[in-house]
Picture 1 (cartoon, rainbow, N blue to C red):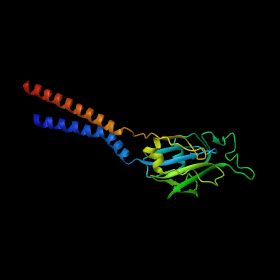
Picture 2 (picture 1 turned 90 degrees about the vertical axis):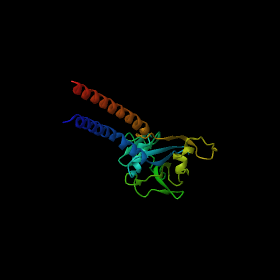
Picture 3 (picture 1 turned 90 degrees about the horizontal axis):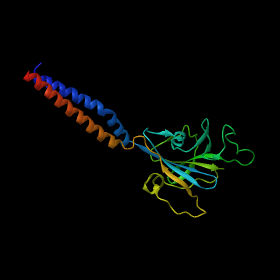
Picture 4 (picture 1 turned 135 degrees about the vertical axis):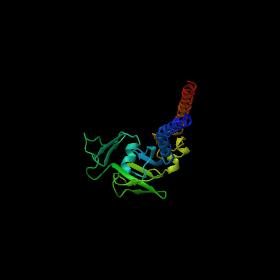
Amino acid sequence: MSTKQLALAIGIAVAVAAIWALQPFTVESAAAQTERRAALIAQFGDGSYVTRCVPFSEESITGLELLIRSGLEVSLWGGAVCRIEQEGCDYPTQSCFCQCKGSSCQYWSYWHLRDGAWTYAQIGSGDYRVQDGAVEAWLWGDARTPPVALSFAEVCGPSALATAAVSEATPSPRDTETSTASNQGSGQNVSLAQYAVFAVMAIALVAGFWFLRGRHAG
């Protein structure tokens, strides 16, 4: 093999190694570009509520997965929601529907916001598919009055971080948060990876050049 052929082979090997090293970061960056989000509201018996903007990379997730990924403290009995945060029934020490005895029934009901109006869920949260841009709610009470009206932009948009003044008669937010996506900051990771790979390529090419030059001189 001639000196030029050997140098070409070294260059090709280094390029292949660089492409292979960058693949995980490229996939991660693509995932960040296709990130989807859904808004979640949990309204308590006193009218206060919390909101979460939950990111996901799948085409859709179930309503139950959305609740679990929100980071709220949840107690479940199969697909039934017994407690969210400190509101509800503390299963398994209590029945999941401990306040549904007799004529009154207080429980966590599941709702979907469609065309600006709340719709009571007709199927369980474990079967319902949540799409990008959806607004979902869980409401503690007798389900006769729908949850507080909030749009997707109010929960997931820039205004979600602002504190709004509310009257005593209006349900008030306990807090508003955006769940952290696992691929946040992936663009920075790609840049750092590119610099590292280019540095390795440069070092390998220089080392190969001096190695070949030494052999040729000898």
